[in-house]
Length: 89
Image: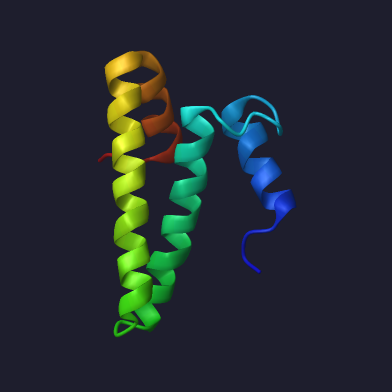
């Protein structure tokens, strides 16, 4: 499996502050970004997989809403996570 509990704990520790801080916006955005990257690679090889395409669109929407919330609440945290993940060009 591409995303096991050890990988999740690593992502949460890197972006959320600790491995148990799963609720922070930064850690959730980082986890969604990891999942989006994985599904994007899958879609490049399997372009007719419509159920995965739908799941990918839903994940992008979730990440977008979390980033919009973070931008509204704390612009500095938003800028830091966008820069750390390389989301904007």
